Length: 112
Image (cartoon, rainbow, N blue to C red; front, side, top):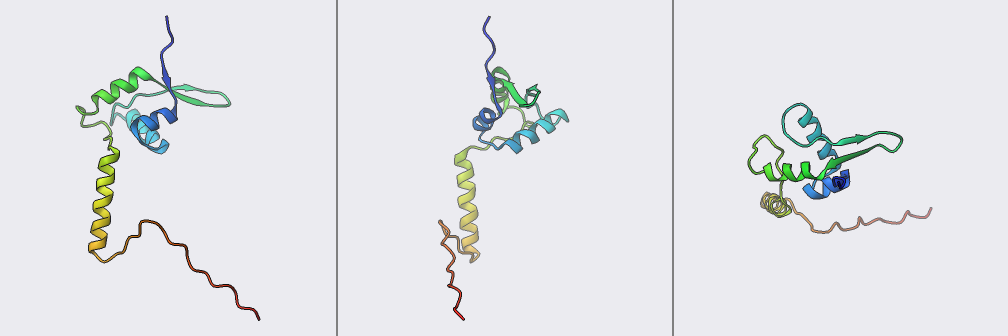
């Protein structure tokens, strides 16, 4: 019998395109009954690890579209659209948005 495939925290973050704090928030919400995010195996000890069963993560991915109480996963494309709309809205309001920050001009201290 083969061992089940396990995902580490970094894998779960990559799969859902979220940060570690978001995973921990989803876990708190899951424990409180607000969503059905899979709970990990907690491998304790000096180098504590959280490991998720791959089948549980895949099942959660499949139910995302049908469960309204589950956390919403936003695609990178929709995040980019939302950000572009926010930038456009700010520019309409007169706030200039630069795509790359310009370095601050500093003047050398005057010699006395």
